[in-house]
Amino acid sequence: QVQLVQSGAEVKKPGSSVKVSCKASGGTFSSYAISWVRQAPGQGLEWMGGIIPIFGTANYAQKFQGRVTITTDESTSTAYMELSSLRSEDTAVYYCARERYDSGTQYYFDYWGQGTLVTVSS
Amino acid sequence: SSELTQDPAVSVALGQTVRITCQGDSLRSYYASWYQQKPGQAPVLVIYGKNNRPSGIPDRFSGSSSGNTASLTITGAQAEDEADYYCNSRDSSGNPPLYVFGTGTKVTVL
Image (cartoon, rainbow over all chains, first blue to last red; front, side, top):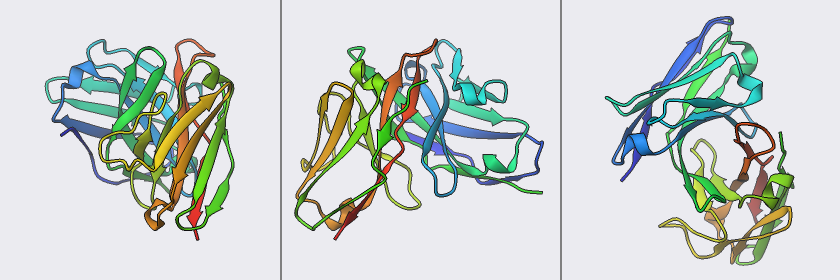
């Protein structure tokens, strides 16, 4: 059974950075892409970016370009999402999710982490 | 980038059928996936591809697609189906391809 376990809640000051981890177990970590999705309080889901561990190249939503960095450590089957220059609007629950794709037209996220609340407040 | 539009809220009587729709240009190229999210919980995949359910998802959930519209149907809605539902699609309008989520639909079971 695949599990994605994320790091705990964080409280950060505006202008600082946060790094959230996502440790995978029960599957072949390197073979699947990992995405990061966030959800501000009372709002919908927002895709931030993703990475395929075996290639190490990340893709980011334009909104977060220059502020977000997604990396992986294959030795520990862990993915990381670092968001810099934090502002109050970045207060949200951040999720990691495993990407799957079949036949070139079916893309989906089959396993999700439990979420990490990041609060940005002075 | 593309957008996926959903109705903000729908209601359904217990045991009846409800259809949730998702519209967007990316759906002409890619199938939608659908996620159920209950308060305080992570999203759960309920439908992916043409009409596939992950293990453990009841068969009252089904999916369909036509043109730029994808639909999630709950046939015989149960109280535990009350939740927010989000569609998602690959988006190849930019380079590299990305993902986009729908705006979400709150389903209330009466």
